[in-house]
Image (tube, rainbow, N blue to C red; front, top):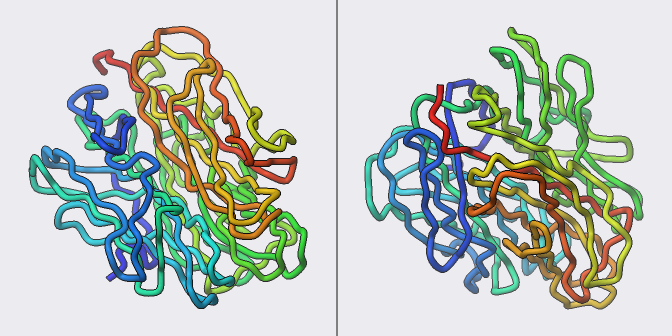
Length: 398
């Protein structure tokens, strides 16, 4: 049973931190009584032909509410197949990332997921398992990442809305209402779509109360190929308290149908920046033109000296077929993580499954975060990049 079939909710939730190495989960404390574990960090999937686990891990659940951030990729042997990756933590219901695979034998990123699990029982070694859908094939060229936040009290942020599912219609992903206390919103968006013409930009537009706040995109080299757009997080300031309406629609030149999917989560930041500081560094930003081994995009941020959660996503392509795509995430030229994909066809813009990294040991000050392409990973102005930094300080609050 897919717990993400088509849902909306507006409960109060809180959040905080992430971590580095896939081989050994990193756990820490963020703010009052909040823990975070990066269970899977750009982990290569196991080879399987469908319906089997693609990555497993464990974490210490102390009991309570959890946010899980995860990404995955996969492929189909036959084409015209829905790809799925199903996350289950402990005894929770599964949550699903998905994309529709028109081509066969082509690795594709699925939509990024931000999910909420309530009232998990304490378990010092709770299992975290991502399992492929019945028609989803994976191998070591596919990658997954999973970061889990166990929420503390009082809440430093809360989830005010989550909507996932197939589009409402051919002209709209979703229209949904939510209530805010006023202040800062972080809107996390991921979706798929396609173009009926080759060589076209596709995307989803997000509007709140009829004001557009952002777009996520990917360049479609092929016509009628469903692709996941490069996901992004949009920081929206000065939202007045009260009821609001979010509408997500396909961008110009984008077609959607029942094979498409979307996932939109809205968080409300309730702590001062010395406790929880969110920086939108790059949101659907065009990449620099380069043929491999060069900087793709960068931006600045200020730190209070707390723990950083760096969420990153991007698209790229290869001049050669059957080649790995990859980027490292760097802070002041020091590598802190990476994300990877596999390009079966040459010259095809593809999304890299993103990563949610935990970075510690950063002193207070100003920094530059950058995406650096691996050798053979090409980008141009049709590619897109997104980086958001969530910093949780050790200050007491309120």
